[in-house]
Image (cartoon, rainbow, N blue to C red; front, side, top):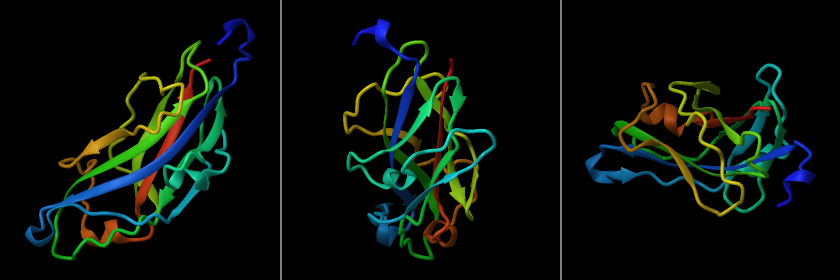
Length: 178
């Protein structure tokens, strides 16, 4: 990498998987698996930069959603319709979001999380899980970064009905200081 040829443009790449919603249902303990189909869209959130091919974020397949950030923040790439089928008598005790994220460069301040949130009823809400100034990796290693835990409901009152709903999911915004 030749820093003298750097043009200031950084690309944020994002592939997300909402890997599990943990329940305390004795008949179905542990993590609930999800489908491999769903919907990811760019959601304009003010003056943010659009994600290109936001639908590519739904699964880890080396076809990422991308956004060009430099001194800006992206819009939300919002992914819903994960296909949970949690039994109605279960209690949701935690949610883990995993994503394969990367950036094209890290100099002059790398690409960082801006907002990492769950989507409930079609709206991003609950605790923001951004990791502050932790730079995204500068290569796609097909490794996941995780937010949340098996005992973290992100400050939301989650139940099988709203987690199984087609408008439940996750959203991510990225930022890069100039």
